[in-house]
Image (cartoon, rainbow, N blue to C red; front, side, top):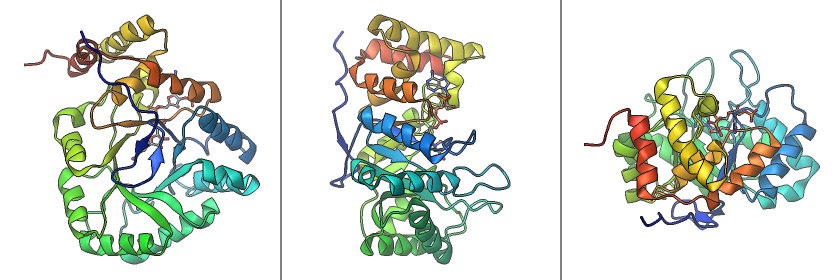
Length: 304
Ligand code: NAP
């Protein structure tokens, strides 16, 4: 059976001229375990050395239920301040719009301040991608669009994306924006397959949005599956991983990357060796038979 096309060495974010690696590295867990700026620098280097140029953070990363808001951005900011040449080697993505203890806030004043605060913590003049982290259903998309267009016009943000938006929310925001959204960031993994059949990825392809997959290993569950269903998914991945001499995690990343929407998995590991091995995902080849075997295991029932 013929193989699915391999992922390209670089992708463009949406219709923008921003070239990125087909794999990203995420910093949700960066500010955990008392990591210092020195520890964070090692992880940033591990990602860049592995050819991963798209780095994803958020203002809320580091928040632990009471404090820590902004800590992951601040750590990365220290890394960038200590080694300014790193900034030019990465496509820097962050997010805002979740304000604990209130869940979500995309009022104009809050959004403007959130973007400014992220730049200050990151110690940069601009970010390449700014994403709304989760939709605020009390914000009118026309007002949100105005603030975001202003952020791009001022040079603080190069391109715009969303995360955890419904298809209708994406369409509504795009309707009012003066430019094209470049990315969407839903949860996608071999354990979280809803977007393959609910239209989200079809909409991304139609609108030219680059899908960035959060928690591509199900937050680590795929590494230690517990339920019968999760074990079946792991076994379907292991069949390909074993034959092609890669780890199950790498097989999982490559499974996402084989989708025609050009999914970019966001590697969540904060272990240098695991970040480095993610680069192997470009080498794995999938046939339709093997790809669908993983999907069927995740569905828990045969295809119709
Ligand atoms: P993940 O890749 O699904 O899970 C990573 C976790 O799995 C880490 O704790 C890692 O531990 C663990 N793990 C265990 N065995 C592993 C192995 N063999 N290989 C790799 N990792 C292994 O991703 P995630 O951290 O949940 O999320 C990834 C990124 O997605 C985040 O950093 C963030 O950028 C983004 N995200 C976005 C949203 C959103 O709402 N937009 C939500 C969640 C996440 P070690 O660190 O010890 O390796």
